[in-house]
Image (cartoon, rainbow, N blue to C red; front, side, top):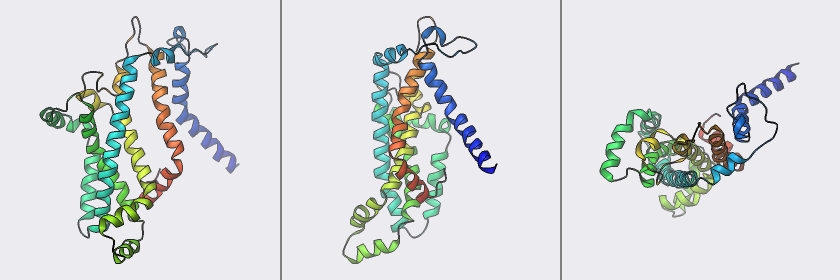
Length: 270
């Protein structure tokens, strides 16, 4: 009985979690005439017209390209800066580490709406409005603290004796960092990188505020601005949402082992 209750709970949890994604996919393959039908009906046949229309949409392809550049760029910047900062806090800094980590956590948890206007002024002064590099800069302000936090907790799990042994062997701090800590910190970097990538891929408010054309708009904004001639194109929106969900899903599945190790090592509980 207890085992049956356990499986029942897991089944309900899976339905609750995967139900919206299944409904999204089902909407994307419905014939256009049945998408907005009330009450909703199970389609008699599946149609891929919505996917064809989305893949033929040059604006959609442009926002996908922009999202790739922005997400990968911000993630790369945050990993480079964040891992070095985490190493400095964990290994080279004896006092004040917890205070700095707390400050970084506060920065990451700041409501985005609270910093939209100040960042708007900064980007305007730097000439970064409606540019890909401007979004990379803004996103890095939030992903770097996340990477520093995760990697600091992960580096703390590495025995300090390895660093001292490397120093005794004549290695400088930088050499010990990229020859000892970086190889051992791969799971933590994968975890932090995926979390940052997901944040950048899904972020909406900054992308909506700081972009005005398809030269720099990202996926969330691009999908929101989908328009139809006579009605709202729910089928195309569902198809586009399904397509842009697959890359993140595949990345998480491929890196699942490293992701779990990174979360456990950093103290994050999923």
